[in-house]
Image (cartoon, rainbow, N blue to C red; front, side, top):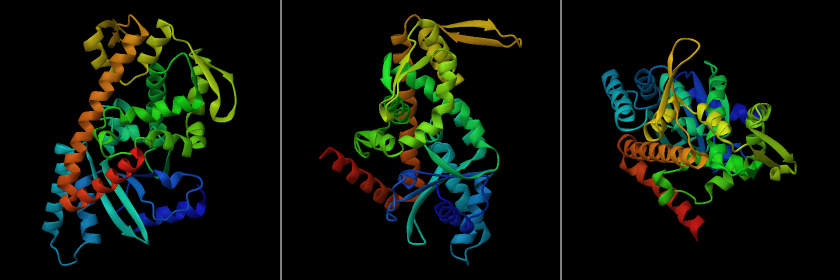
Length: 332
């Protein structure tokens, strides 16, 4: 991303309370995107959402509203995000400097937990796709390495023995849409392909070190190189399958263990660990897909209800109608 564009995107943060983490994502990152009418999407990480929302309401709302009103509003926003949604409050349809913005606010602890363990698989799924970080005080970029490594393992489980590099990124991208309720009526059916084709170079630079790591472990090898049609071959043996499953987050392995069985063993550090019993690659892939589909479905449903309650019926309906219009156009 060019310095001018980065400065322009960062300037929005000057009208908000301080944040510990900020990234932008979506069509803003497309190399050839010059369309300023497109919405810019931000994720903001803060240590205390109630304090942050209260400060934001004081900075950007009626100056005559009382401190108690601001605090009450901040608590309501945070409680809806935490108890109804998945810990993220989105504010859509923000107009600033002739641009349309949407930002989501999340507690830093919740962001890190989702990245590492996929319990909600909401922002962790977003961070498996290209984003541009504008603020990273707690080195989330490094923490996200665990998430990207797990994403490659999950994608490889779902892919055949031979595939292209583009197939791999499409499968990674699709993980967070499996079971997403919006995909049935409010999302572009070609969304995954558009994301991968529009940001292929970003996916490539994002996942290159992890593919090299897989190659070193003999989990896959590059058979030919032709731009986005680079062909890869993976080891589909049971031992390779077990290695991939072991790289998945603990909460996913735990759910798989409940379905497939689990063997307990004591690690070198003395901890009791569980290993998922795997009798075939197909069985492991189907089980993991079922776990992820269920997780995404629950999170997308909760977030939709949370958005409707917190952003208000009018804003939520406007946002949904825009999504549905794009979805129906993609089906036409």
